[in-house]
Length: 202
Image (cartoon, rainbow, N blue to C red; front, side, top):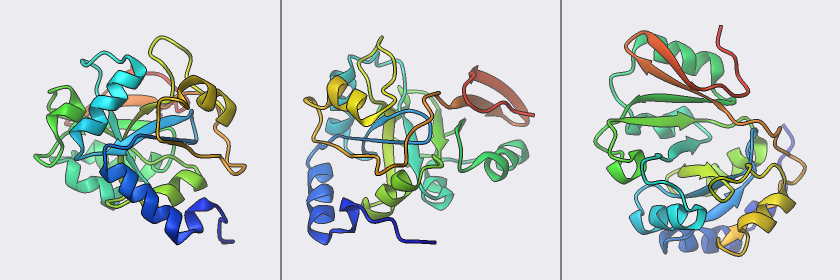
């Protein structure tokens, strides 16, 4: 596969990015669905910033996204057979899986719930971003002010929240499709669709 040439290939920028994230930074980026906001999972001040930037209700949790399931695995536990089947079938892709959280997942991410949403977007730029972020996992939500439509392009993200975050990445041609992910809760082997989005489960 041809190497994706972006600003993330620049060592100095990656060092600055990780430094920014470690100091409560919030960034905006493209995914396969809509544009996202993200920060480090273990940085409560950064998570607080995301809620403040969006004007987001604190009862609505963030989700964890990465480029590899192995990075997300420590944040979940007691995965059922059905949950593992969904991971194998729909990751990477436009599906957010809500399962039991592990002790590693902070309650400020999950809005004090015992579950956490995880996803691996099928977008090459986002995958590259996670591959250079320390820890490889971001706490995320859509890049828009609460109550407004999700940003579907770099320009929309820049205009909506660009002045409120530390960096808005270009998409380098790996655009979003503009439809949010499907969110599915798995309890043991039963499924509950919390939000119907781009993916329809069989």
